[in-house]
Length: 364
Image (cartoon, rainbow, N blue to C red; front, side):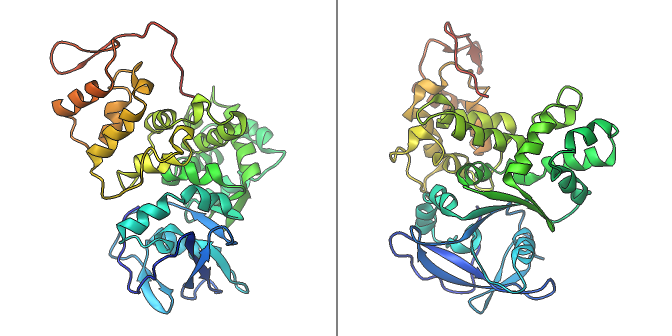
């Protein structure tokens, strides 16, 4: 999450409070307006928006917040335009506006509540973006309850329907690391792309059907959208405390699947809420903390989690995602923390890859 400077003044939150938007009524051509209010999280009724921030631009539009113009990213503006209704106001939680992004202490505190915020929402709206690349075709096909498998079998390889589905499932939204937690905790979520809406259950059922075509449809194999379906399966199928919901396992999934974050701290912070082994304050969310300190603190809490893997496989790629300098000092710091017979320096500056003696856990 990057920072934006508001043109209005935030009022400090009381303990247990969050901010909500009351998204005003409007038609397509009307300006987007809303009011910010405070509510106790435990008592609030609202929907939460899950979306990709996108790249900041000089052409980013304004929305009216409490009577003042506030610049927001284009993708958020489009989402609010599509979500609002003509005759009814909507209570909505949106991170860019409901968190004072220029206030590090508040940001750290509110980020620590993200799991509860999305878990308490009556519905989470997964906003994929505006309609493009024949996304309406893809959404219509994914909404089919009984005919999807048959239609796919009859469709041509490389045809417009299959291409549209591929492009939908590889949108940047799906690779945002925060999306994992946002959809993981959602009691109910709907997938929206432009004007098209699909329920969570239907979307995930369609994803499961697509997986039956993996052997012949290479482009859909391991698509990032399916990682979120599998993440929700982890919560459903594996009791708390099992290895699959631990921080090191989530980090390995993110590295293998190419998840990204606009703020390097969030490669760690976005996963804390869904990691069973980090629920007792092992890491405090603090955006003022130096990235190197956060990285080394993370791997030092449970160093045994990394001992069966060459650093080139996970630890160094994780450091690269956090934009750390991959020098000899970093390698030595890693070795001091993850000190095991399986980690030995080879000749020169690279790490030796020594296979473990015992079977190790696999990351799905």
